[in-house]
Each structure stands twice: as structure tokens, then as C-alpha cells.
Image (cartoon, rainbow, N blue to C red; front, top):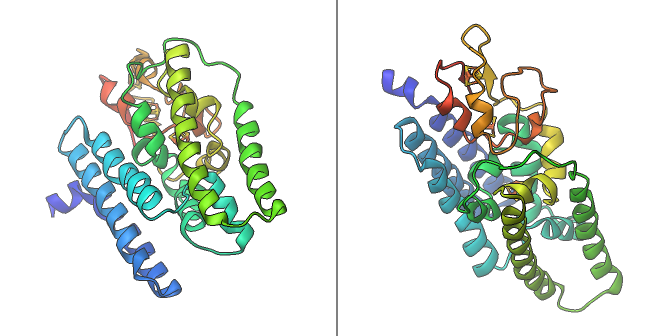
Length: 277
Ligand code: SF4
Ligand code: SF4
Ligand code: SF4
């Protein structure tokens, strides 16, 4: 019983993803969804269980298992464009598949439950950016968040243009745009990280996906909260946060509240155990 209590979070995650896997399998009559969401749920649950056991690199395990799977297997081997362009593409086609389902689960509805968990544990762009040498931003945050609206609009316009031009071999064009888009994201992410001494600068200023993630994250069920009776205002939590969140403020409108990637660093850094998820 104690064990069940200890591993409640990974078990709940596993159940949630199994529910999605079985639901989509039966609804769309496609066993791929059973495999896909079982695998993702299994990878995430394993990483959460490792985190509970105190394994320092548990989040990296999740990023490699889930992000690596989506980039290499789904993107490069199966040829499914899981980037935002792929989401628009399937939406324009009127097909609720692949990228459209991925966005609905991970980036539009999912954040109501697990906030920006996608960004902390599964994104294949951040999987690489998190390996760079600036896990904690060395400079104050800039007011550049508007730039993500430009990349968001550019992705939408790009796909609209493809449909407008009625290009042949659209699937092939989408595959090439997946490869080119990822290379561009990695290049921009690495450049920004070194320029601003901040691994997550791309997430803060340029990533178009955050336009979807932020509104639902505001209402996230899973979030870091602070026990004000235990807090001694030492500031150690804010010193280690990669996303500049004011996690000592429990209001939903707290500074950069919709940026939290649930990495847990603030919780580990708190000397009085005032923070919890
Ligand atoms: S903000 Fe964008 S690049 Fe950063 S982790 Fe989230 S989805 Fe990935
Ligand atoms: S350090 Fe805490 S508040 Fe900051 S992103 Fe990680 S979990 Fe969220
Ligand atoms: S590290 Fe803990 S005690 Fe210190 S300010 Fe943050 S929540 Fe409060």
C-alpha cells in the first residue's frame, strides 16, 4: 500500500495515457495509437518513477525516450510532420490524425492537466537545448515574447501557401519542411542560448508552440505551489529556475506562471520543503 502511494503519480500517468491509447485505438480503428500512446505513457511514467527514486537524470531519460522517439521514429522514419506545420497541414486536410492528435493531446487539452509538462519531459528541441551549458539564465528576461507570434503566423502562412499553390507531392514537401524546420529550430535555439547565456531562450522568445501551450497552462491542475508557512524567503528556488517563474506566489497570475516546465529544480533547491507539485 505504501509502495502504491509512493508511485501514485507515475501510475496515474500510465493510466491516463493507456486510456488515451485504448480510446483512440477503438475510435479510429488503428492499433498504431495503442502502441504510440502506451509507449509515451510508459516512458513518462518510468521517468517519473526514477525521479521519485532520486535519480538525477530522470527528466533526461524522459526527453530521450519520448522526444527521441517522436523525432526519429515518428518524424524521420514514419515521415509524419509532428511540428506545428504538420498540425496545420492535417487540419487543412480535415483529417484528425498524427500531428493533429498529438497537438490536441500534448499541447492544447493536455496542459489543462499537466501544464507545460511537454516542454520539460518530451520536446525533442528542448532535449538538445537542455544539454547546453546555461541551465540557469545568466541575464534578466527580455520582453521578446511577441516574437513567437511571428513564428506562429509564419508556420500558418507557410502551410496556407502550400495549399493555395496546389503543389503536387504535398506529403513529400511536408517531410522536407519537417527536416528543414527542425534544423532551423536547433540552429536558432543554440545561437540564442549562447548569445543570451540561457538554454531555454528559444522556448521563451521564439517557439511558436508556446502560443498553444500558455493559455491552457494558466489553468493547469499540476503546478508548483508554495507553503507560505514553511517559506523563509531565501530565494534559492528562483535562483535555479530556468524559466524565471515566481513559484513562491501561489496565484495563477504569478510572474511567468505559464512558463513553468515542471522540471522540479526549485523543489529540490528549497531548504525547507516549502514547494511541492
Ligand atoms: S517552448 Fe517549444 S521548444 Fe521549448 S520545450 Fe516547449 S515546445 Fe519545445
Ligand atoms: S524550477 Fe520550478 S518553477 Fe521553474 S520551471 Fe522548474 S518546476 Fe517550474
Ligand atoms: S527556496 Fe523555499 S524557502 Fe527559499 S524562497 Fe523558495 S520556497 Fe521559500
